[in-house]
Amino acid sequence: MMDPRTLSERFPGDFLFGVATAAFQIEGASKADGRKPSIWDAFSNMPGRVFGRHNGDVACDHYNRLEEDLDLIKALGVSAYRFSIAWPRIVPEGTGAVNEKGLDFYDRLVDGLKARGIKAFATLYHWDLPLSLMGDGGWTARQTAHAFERYARVVTARLGDRLDAVATFNEPWCSVWLSHLYGIHAPGECNLDAALHALHVTNLAHGLGVAAIRSERPQLPVGIVLNAHQTYAGSDAAEDLAAEKRAFDFHNGVFFGPVFAGAYPEGFMSGLGHRMPPIEPGDMETIHQKLDWWGLNYYTPMRVLADPAPDADYPATLPAPAVSDVKTDIGWEVCAPALGDLIRRLNAAYRLPECYITENGACYNMGVENGAVDDQPRLDYIAEHLAVTADLIAEGYAMRGYFAWSLMDNFEWAEGYRMRFGIVHVDYDTQVRTIKKSGHWYKALAAQFPKGNHARSAAE
Image (cartoon, rainbow, N blue to C red; front, side):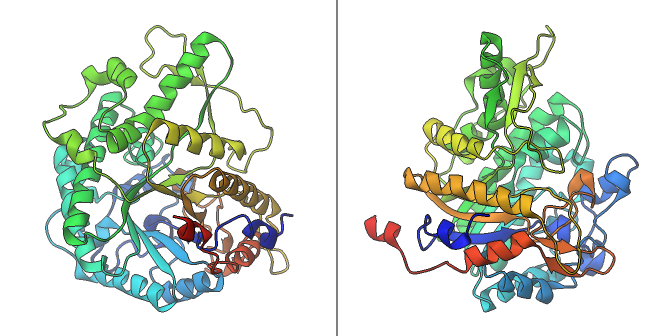
């Protein structure tokens, strides 16, 4: 086992160690204090969508156990907490009346973090679109981008004075492709044209949101969280190498290009531009605003082969087999070097601001035995990926922090409660929290920070 003190010596003293969650996955209280349904409430309650028809009605009961959970974060010794804000709590219909009780909850959350000396990293959108907006087309409709702009302004006006950083979106890849093309996440569409509309509307909403945040709080660091994919060709054949480049553009470039370079990738537009929604004058300028930071959520690489079918839609790829036999309990290949390859590749392709690893972790489903959870594979996973992050810092990349996913076991979207990513175990029957072996190790690492070794800052 990697010694946390030895590993800590590889990071600058002001490197930020944190934990992360998302509102729908932990809060529960789905009908409390004025909250109205999100698309995930509806999706979860439809047969065949989520394992066991599990839903977010109770989840980790975080809404009612806020103080206990803030004490838990404090007990882990981390310096920062990344959480998301539930749009259906703030503007329950998506547009219209603002729900003060919803804002009150996040007031208590942020004030509780401040009182405990923990930095607050908020995400405005982590997939829980107010269900009312689906009647107008949800993310396929331009007006949703403007509804998001107003929501961003409301939240920033209320909480922005106490936030340390804010992200507009979490993993738009999921809320665009996984939700509108592959049908795995809410709203469960399997339609390329719907997905392409959602892509541009989401990118536009990001840009409008950035402007809204800055109009309220010009000094608040604003960014976006992207689950970029390190794509690898499944063979050295020319067709597979070409497919890998298409995959990189389709899964990464359609977000990084507009946000960081002001344009969609040329290959993507050649293949699918004729099916994109209208890109109106000023759209790309709105999307392409300088950001203060960006977040990377990384778990596993993507390996692809060319799809030989003549009618295959761009990017015309098929999955290639994993290279490593090591997989987590959700079936994802473990490949820490891919994290380094991805950061290097993205920085070579785009002018990127400083970066936080905003999610990284592993699904292992060990339970409590004799009051403890021995999740050594998760500990190893986190340690291996932190070692790669330390390598990147040594190479000069602006890696500023790391957030373990997740603070606690929670509602794992289409997998329901059967998959566990937490460094804290949750017994869903009793809501008892038990810090796992990985959590104790991470606490020992976080305890070394901040340690006054501000060599990076002094050298700048």
